[in-house]
Image 1 (spheres, rainbow, N blue to C red):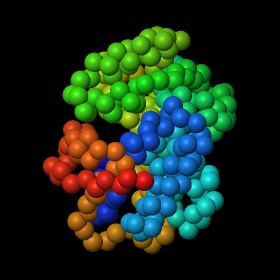
Image 2 (image 1 turned 30 degrees about the vertical axis):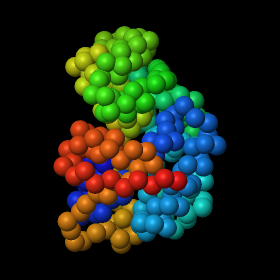
Image 3 (image 1 turned 135 degrees about the vertical axis):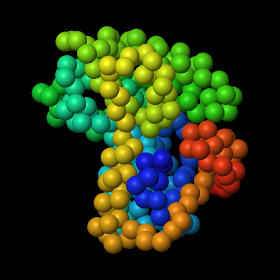
Image 4 (image 1 turned 90 degrees about the vertical axis):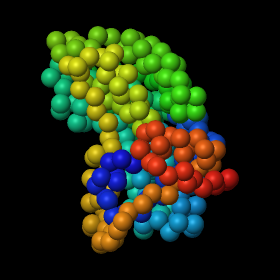
Length: 254
């Protein structure tokens, strides 16, 4: 959301938080596809969206192909772990990847990994519970579980650093994990590059809108918050992580 606002300052965004049906990363593909289809239909019918960003690696892996087939007239941008740029950036050619189990065990992820196997050695770590812990931390103001899980999973991956045989690049394979980046950076050290996907996704979204001739030319841009969960939780998250001053959030019960 931060990257999209920076790249598209005149656009109106509808940010939908499906916390009543989350976390996706620990659910089966059928659940994720069903939710992705319902959300897309809602956003089109109620908000008349002109493009869709699937801001979830797991939902992208499970549902993006079906959504594109069902909505051929709608530009759809997915997110996936940045394995290719990480392989290019790594000097030791050992790249760490953290993500939800749903993402890192998906066929789409493993096809991407296989296609790059001659470019780097990817050390992949599923991080059960981390996305949920990050979400819950905004409710209780306690990062202790987030810190503990980060330490557990980083420790399991091996040695980080810039020497031969060490992991010198870490890919954040879940859009929640950027909020744990300070903790992760403290664990892996300053010599390790941490990559997320916000800016590339924002650039791609802008390109598709420009190509379609639908880029907003008048502002100001704004963000509308919608949730299937508790509005107060989304409001608190927006204040903490996006710097929003607003307390406006609409609950969508479906």
